[in-house]
Amino acid sequence: MPSVFRESLLAGKVAFVTGGGSGICQRIAERFAQHGAKVALLGRTQEKLDHAAAAIRTAGGEACGFAADVRNYEALADAMQKTRERWGEIDILLCGAAGNFPAPALGMSANGFKAVIDIDLLGTFNTCRAAYEHLRKPGASVIAISATHAFRPIPLQAHVCAGKAGVDILIKTLAIEWGGAGVRLNVISPGPVADTEGMRRLAPTEEISSKLTAAIPLRRFATKDEIADLALFLSSDAAGYITGGVFVCDGGQSLTGSSFASLLQSK
Image 1 (cartoon, rainbow, N blue to C red):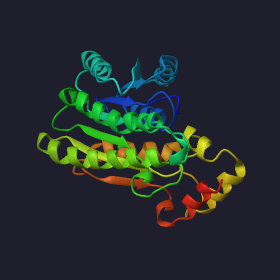
Image 2: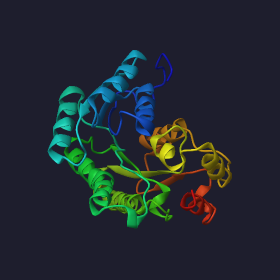
Image 3: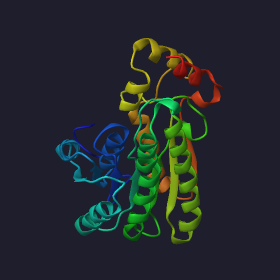
């Protein structure tokens, strides 16, 4: 993250980011702040949020953190109300909280399956629903972080595939319902992203990582910065007429048939 924020694509805007204490969503929050947005971070661990917010402030941005679970609607609504009281209406909403663990369907419990569905799908609904009254209308941009799992079955990921498929169609539906108010909703669907907890779990060894990389047309994983740049575009005025889209950022991985899935299943 740069030491001085000079860009201003989002100057004067307020962003609310769930899952913002780590990983892809932390990098997106940093990018929003880099371009002038005031950023509220929400996650389950206050220590992580404080660290992420402090890094943004040290670099010259404005940020704060709220510890809450996206499965808890009342806690979400309270954090958004406090954000609005502090900075005003919310211009950018990033729904990024997610759960994942690799397991075959016969190797996971009903509670394990439900936990991921509740974090990914119910959590996205809760975040969007709780935020609606606080969004700046017209002009607000809502972005959900999904995955190529939504349209490409992956072994050991039945819970994630189901949850992300639900996220995609939920956002498309809300894009229709909320379009008249001037609220735009889009999905970012990353493939493998380097230096993330998800890939550390799915590709725990260098051998597996190398095989997965070889199955991607661009022959590498995405960087967190590349996902953040896509989020920046979708939240900016440059994307002012874009809504209901699913933006795949996977280096062509989803074009390669079953090779990626086979590698995961055989690991």
